[in-house]
Image (cartoon, rainbow, N blue to C red; front, side, top):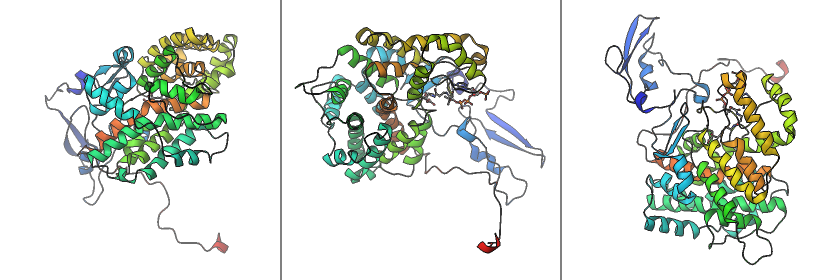
Length: 442
Ligand code: SDX
């Protein structure tokens, strides 16, 4: 079950002690294994052997369904109660009262900033929005129709070659400079990849604008001297960045932690996160949702699509979650933001298809029994589309927001004395001690 305050305090069992007594029926031996934070250390199982030279027992947990890989204080999720907190602050309050840069500070520094800290943080990020001109030339090498997430993946990794000092991951001052650069430059790289796809000249950052406003300017500015973002769209995008900022040990964050555990520079580790987020089961789901809604086309086609899902021929993209077995609190907030954006852009008829899908799915036993509810990706694509973004840009927008979470988790991993290079074990299922067969004998 997802961590829950009572559970992690470990209600004392029958014997009153926080231990697990394991009997190995192969040998009749028993073992006492300590329980801490609702977990046992897998390495405790190594003592359980039949023969003294055995390796000892391990756990086998494909996709890590029941394996904690780290201790973290960054994000708390209670999947059964639909609770999401960044450094202990409920996502609902942060979405309503904070800004993305303040939330990024909170995630990375572990506390809400004072005004002077926020001003300095904002100044540092603002003053680092430009990228080296060679990155622009590098990005122009992509095909005109290259997927922008593939471009962002490459450009993020390429940044490690522009800041070779970033490999000094234990040097706090050098490390912090890369943290600021990553937060500052991801929107620039994202916007450059969009403009490349559009065949339009790249727009340089406008440091007079807010974080979200500057991104909109780099996306949409044409011949006007100064782009003026619509404050309602600017606010909606800032809220979306907040909602996507972190989500504990999701697939892409685990990739950042695992790759970062080799002590590679943060650009390469974050590039691994971009790669994982690209997948349609993860950050690519928002793109898949829009394609799905367009394919359904009209509310009248929803029942037959739902039947397709139930017969296993379709997947209801934007529904389901590994942790949330109730509603995803972010989906509720995004649904509200959709209305705010549609006030400006006009209502997208696909919203009717989405709300009909949600209505039917929430009443249908197939989805209820599998605890499938709308996740963060179900409605976000409607906002991105309303902002005029092509579907290929949706995971890129997710990556901009998630960069602060990836960095916060990476910093926590680097400073965690319990962590070392990630290197899982395996259950070997292949052949053994085979003799080489010459090619004319095969
Ligand atoms: C994100 O981990 C995070 O925190 C991720 C994220 C973040 O902020 O980082 O929240 C962001 O990635 C959100 C998820 C976006 N992905 C999608 O919307 C893609 C559609 N959803 C799924 O593919 C699925 O629900 C996952 C990948 C999200 C979760 O998969 P699990 O936990 O491995 O669950 P599962 O695939 O084993 O599904 C359990 C059952 C299966 O049915 P049975 O085999 O038991 O009959 O539910 C079914 C699945 O077939 N199922 C779905 C479904 N999702 C699961 N059936 C139809 N439509 C779906 N969307």
